[in-house]
Image 1 (cartoon, rainbow, N blue to C red):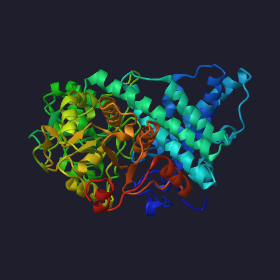
Image 2: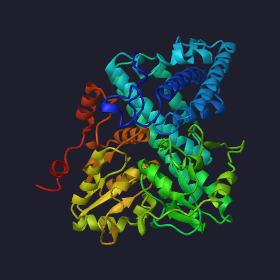
Image 3: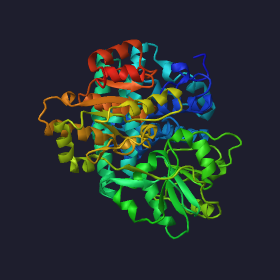
Length: 551
């Protein structure tokens, strides 16, 4: 373990291999090691919790909430605040020891695992963190599959936490997450067995995304076709980033008579599609683009910024907006004010609102409208039109271009690809990858927009529902018989659980870009290619031919 750190969980990892000095995302080696130790402690908690469950001993909700939050806070670009991570480690060790005491009282024999036997205090954290990270597994293929599962679990935890904040929960999902983490800590399985575990993770991912879809639509209604303003008004504003709709709702409610407007950024754009939020006259529109452009766009916005979840780009030392940054939930950044929830899960946003009143209105960086709101309910309402267009040949193919955006220059590929698509194709999207093409004048087909935006990466479930419904409508035996091409951009761990979910549904020939994950060893990549048709991308010209769009 001669490196300061080792992390390869995101698409932009250094040299396509792994970050060893500092994360490309901006996290320090110290933060990376603290996250490794937190995950080590979480595995210990999960080993005991799993043993208790298998002896029919109930595990408290506090354990479920802690594990979910800990996984979420280690997602790329979520938390850069070492002290908040260290406090989680402190709490996790105490929780693990409490669970072990419960097992001891009941005479339950626990497996031997370093995650259980280590009794460190803060003075020991640095040394322990250096030996419990990704490279603790020496076998490259086993490491690859274990990390694939862990990253899927992180994405699952993110979706689950959003659902939990809206009152929807599922004890079986928590049990599965902790069972998988326990197996990673203590089980010695073959490559084939770990591959099966990865597919099972995908199956539970589908269930988790369905739970979140239920939570969002029950609380805020089904997303509907909506035109969203991308200009600005003349009042001060608050900019909301991330994915948490519950935070947005509370902010809108608390600020509606304050003389300020609320704007979304990045992945919060799809909030405008929900009927419940349209009653707020001060919900002004979307400001800017995908998360990675925030340094320039946050500076020109002028008002406070609320990070509800991941997608923090560390501000430069001389950034004029750092003092206007607020974090919540699993996010954190040193020096920024963190908004804690009370015992009932509610937050007081009065500090943000009062700050906004003193700020200048945002500087307009673009104007006009973009259209979205094509989650499964809205698309199924258009099913007759869609089927007719397919049968008549007006729509030849659908292209799923969902996923994440990022800074890599190679992501220009997705803009060029969208421009080159024939006019008889429709793009299905979810996630911030859409910012590569959702402002292009691609037009419509018989009134059906050529870009159907289902929403956040959280809403990728809609794309699966739409595909399964089309399979039923066209009376097909196999989802892969549909005229759908999968050309997906990925960045972080929520994209990993979406990929595993699609594989569990039997979808094949998925192309990932701009690069394949660094955590896939050559042998594991070969398995995915041979069994599931996973592939990378080439040039736009090459891929147009590969996908059958030109000869």
